Amino acid sequence: MGMIEKTLMNRKQLVLFLLLSIASLMHGQNKNSDEYFTHHRASITGALTTSDAYQLQFSYHYMFWKYFGVGGSFGWWKNWYEDGWASGSNWSINDDDNKPGNLYLRPSVMLKSPAIGIGQFALSVYAEPGIMLNVPYQRVCIEKTTGLIVTDYDYISTNKGQWFAMDIHLGINADIGPCGLSVGYLMSNLDIYSQYRHLSYDGISFSKFYPIHPFMQGAYLTLSYNF
Image 1 (cartoon, helix red, strand yellow):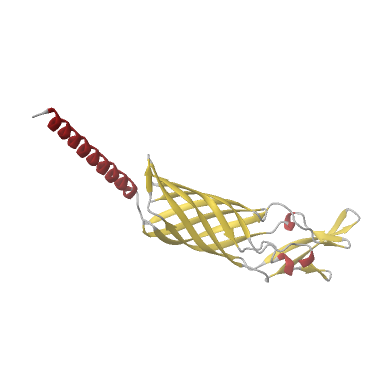
Image 2: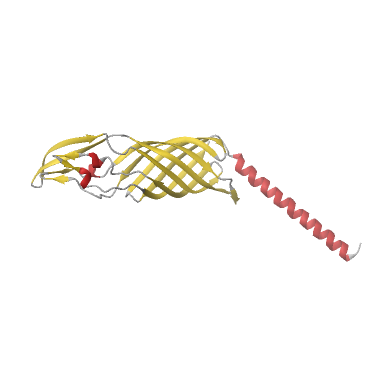
């Protein structure tokens, strides 16, 4: 066998070795991504929004397929920065109650793209559209004052205003074994001051004190576990 034939043979063996190595690596990555697939996914999510509010929610989804699941969340949102102050002659809203917050249930659908293996991580694009169902009730404390001294308290409430909102989480999901991490962007049509604007006291409507925020966006972080 001549030198040319030996060179061609070595190249063919090298190409065959590379192809077998790539196939083995792809098989190993696919096996790794499938190994921890189960039907149950629990998670906790924290978010900060442009409405000066934070969210904390606990979720569960039943994964019918690696890329599709249905479930829901139980959560709480709370305003942390005052963007208005309801007050009148010798009265004002209590300081703690001036920052609205609410509990909510959030049925949602989970969508994930096929994963790309990078080292031990399986990266995928993540989307979770949902519907926020807030408690349709708000109750606040009114402080009656004489000068700077609080002399009495009164309470007012409403069951009007927005309690239904649509939202979506979009981001990148990274799984390593049964654990996962998602980071990204959220948007919602929740107006956190909607219920407060339906309150009134002493003939004064709160609508003039609190702004309208028909759209909010923000960033979220989700930690998940598949079991």
